[in-house]
Structure formats: C-alpha cells, structure tokens
Image (cartoon, rainbow, N blue to C red; front, side, top):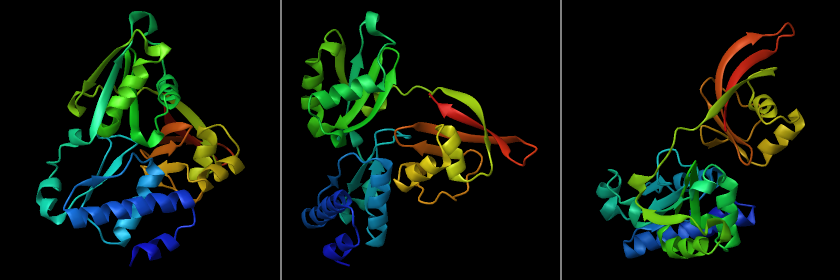
Length: 269
C-alpha cells in the first residue's frame, strides 16, 4: 500500500497531516539509515499512528514519553540495522528528550498547578507538540520537552514574571521526580458497567453529553481509544477523559433496589 492510498482513508485533515509526516519519517529512516521521531502525541494521535504502523507492517519503532506512565509520547522509528540495539531497550532517550526542572521560591511553593506551567509555555509561543508531560510537585515541576526545543523553552520561561524568582536546571530522564499520584475514592450509582454510564457519573454530566465526549474521541480505557459507549468496563481499568481527568474503576460495592450498581472509583486529583 502506497502513501496516497493510506492518506485517502483518512478524512480529518489534521490526522492526514500527522500520518503523512510519520510516513515521511519512515521513508527517511529507510533511505538514510537514520533514527527519526515524531513530535509529542496525545493518546488518540498515538493510537492512530500505531494503527497505521500495523497496517503497513512497520515494526521497527518505539514509543516513549520519558517515563513509564507518560501520557504524551513520541514515536521513534529506526532502520533494520539498529533493530537489535533499539528493540532491546538500549536506546538513549536523552538524545531526543530533555527535562527542564523548575524549582519555585519558598513563597510560591504549593501555589502553582499544571495550568500555570502550561499557560506559561503557550505564552512564550511554544507549540504544544514540542512539550510532553508536565510533572508538577509542591516545590515546582519537571517539564519534558524535545531536545531541539530545550534552549528556546528554557530561555522563554526564564523571561516570564511568574518564574522570575524560580531556579531552572536541565536534568536527565533518570532524574525525573515522579510523585505517587493522589487520588480520592468516590461512589457512583450506574445502571451498568458501560463506559458511557461511568463517564457520565465520573465527570458529573448527562448520559447524552458523555456519549458526545466518547464520539469526540476523548475517552480512553487503559490508554486505548474508546469509540463505542457500550464498551464494558472492568475492575482496575484506568479511564482517561481528555480535559476532565483520570479515574480507576474499583469494586462493585452493592446494588440498589432498582437494580443499579454502586461502584467505587478512584479519581486522580
């Protein structure tokens, strides 16, 4: 199957451009015997590209966001001559990813959220696809960026008033400070273990709105895109609703007189 045949199957123009760029990188990999990589991808984009990779039977690739549970990742494609090295996890991700560490002054510790860091990045004109996960802490944040954008992001953030008293350092991926995520347990009452029912209660919206969110391709179960509201969810499944948060499905605690289920879920806060 040639490139145009693949692109003709895609109706969304942004997706078509994304796939086209990846196919070009695979061509460069094969022609130049070089390692190539995408910009950062969200979960929906990653799944789209992995679907295409499977379709064209291209297996020489890796996916990483710098740490095990990263939401935003890059796809790295490599030539056959490097297959033995890269497929055995011997690739140095520090060669393409960088970590900018921001340490806040005492008077600002505990006051900045993910939004404060992301809005700062947007303010200095950095495209979102050049930035991976932003891992926040009480005393600051670790921001994962593409290596080739490191200098521009670093210098831009230093110029912002909100970070004028902060300390900046560049560290390796092995030095990432990933804290155990905080969760709160809540009980929801649902008619069934369908994903649309759980999303509706988890993000406190109507069933119709939950269905709309699923159709907009914003819902993932264990990092896999969900396209049908009837999809059954199981205990310990991790649900991500883009823009609304993450939830882990717990046990069915009880059932009501009307036959509804009382389910415990953990909300990541």
